[in-house]
Image (cartoon, rainbow, N blue to C red; front, side, top):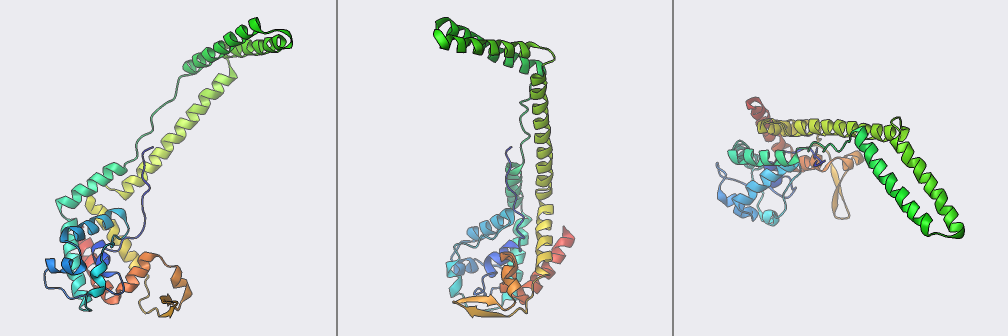
Length: 278
């Protein structure tokens, strides 16, 4: 079955957190998302758009290549978030994203398993043909064998003849068992296909706006659990949560935490309004 494994990683409004989730990244932007921002990040606007697309489609963040981010001065993260969200919304509402989504949706669709089942008579004739070959081979061996080997081959010949007769029997239990076995296998294949097709339809609805809607809802549900007041300490050059259980939170949860409550408040408000439109 041609089926991809679907990712269920919570997606955190890809454009914003591709560019803002790293703890060191924050900057001031003009009222409109200018090309200068992409230059500061060391990528082109096309690269930025591709990261947004891939992040939303793949379900995980594509923020590779943003090496210049460390050199960007601290600024108004909330304003940057608003601009990037607006850009993200515009792109995800475009025919370009719809086309990319539909392409991935089609490529991810499970293929119905090919039906290789055979009728009971087809199975019988194949078994008879195989049994006849064994009989013929044994008969040839008996003719050329001598002494104890001839006795052994004779016994094998008799066994093969009995097997042939059993295959030719209309009431053969072996043929019936083989027939039922393939029926059971086919039934399981179809059940698996229906299950995968249902999962695919849920993951990739026909309307790409529903796909975006699900991503936004997943983000809001996860972000609502983030404790922005959580304290950290440094250990071996790394920041560690004082509350040990937070260390086991998902990377997405930690990204939202690192982006900060200011970014979250802007993102939450924007996402909630966006959902009403979807």
